[in-house]
Image 1 (cartoon, rainbow, N blue to C red):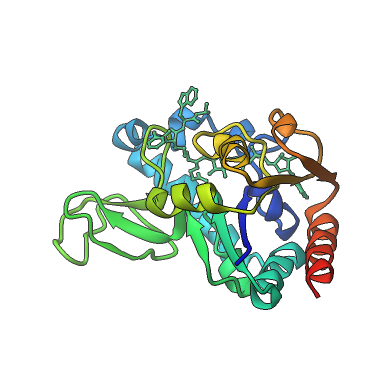
Image 2 (image 1 turned 90 degrees about the horizontal axis):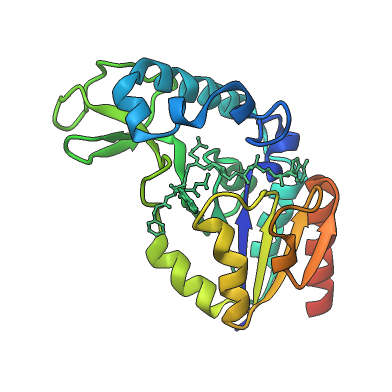
Length: 232
Ligand code: BV8
């Protein structure tokens, strides 16, 4: 059975109003990664880090999936083979668009974690320093996000999927964060055909067999329609 593995990044949620990271007005232009997206930053200034994720959580709750998220959910429904989405994004727009097979390799804004007892629960809209873990009552709660220097989630699903994919498609990512940035090369070496759907050429575009550039809301639905047409 044919298997399509899709990697998504901030670009697929850009037209839902959620900031990307490395575009000129992106999140990393407003905050230094070292100050808000590393474990050391959280130890140094947990209030600042909670504030950064509280703001993004509030924005994500107000955002709506766009037609690119919808097209991927359609692909999963109508494609005769298997579809897996590996997302670097921490919003839940893929799920709200109807996708069911989604791996959040960098965690999720709607997840909370206790760094004392490893308990996980649905994050409140606002997380504060001093909040108690519902399980062990320690004041040790953090966003369930994978920061730089931490091990991404879902590797036990991702690695086999990359090795068995027939088609690997990367959507709306600048390919600058590892290990995700190496996925196209890895799956291509294992025999997958690799496709890049992006706003413009990225640093790692040469890793792909095929590229389609433009807004995700235009390029992704068109690409999905092509895939489904070829298989009917
Ligand atoms: C790890 C947290 C070990 C949540 C994030 C030196 C060399 C190589 C690697 C390293 C190195 N030094 C350190 C590392 C490792 C490090 C790393 O890669 N650093 C980089 C900066 C060099 N990686 C790690 O630490 C990772 N962990 O390596 O552990 C390990 C490895 C393997 C196995 C076991 C253990 C952990 C990385 C996770 C960090 N957390 N996020 C959050 O705050 O969101 S990363 C952050 O960047 C987000 O998750 C984001 O998704 C991700 C990638 O960014 P993009 O999604 O690509 O977004 P970006 O803005 O960059 O690009 C947007 C794209 O969309 C652009 O192409 C743009 O053109 C396009 N676009 C814009 N608008 C549209 C559009 N496309 C279509 N339509 C539009 N409308």
